[in-house]
Amino acid sequence: MTKKTITSEQVDRWRIVPRLFICLYGLAFFRATEWFMALPEPTNAQSAYISVIVGAGAAWFGLYVSSGKSSVKTETETQVKE
Figure 1 (spheres, helix red, strand yellow):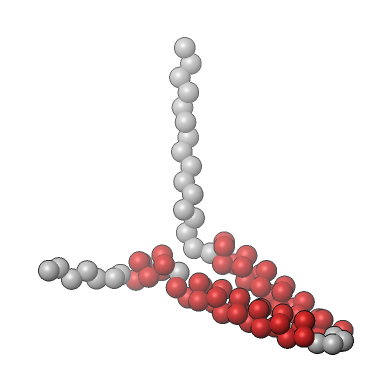
Figure 2 (spheres, one colour):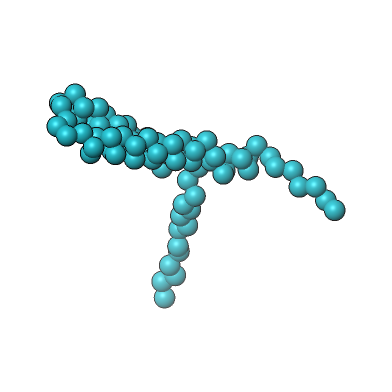
């Protein structure tokens, strides 16, 4: 039986840490939204707090999507004229 080793490049391709952060942000977003919706009369400061959480999530998601190597490959097609 051969032992398969996991290289650091494979771990980088799995993107474990960014995926973990996205999951934790989702949980924090959900809990903050629950808290905000349970408030009888939210103040301006509480509304601003939720806006910051939502804005930070949009920024974090943008960084997550644009990070890492691009998997899109383009090939040029040559057309033969008759």
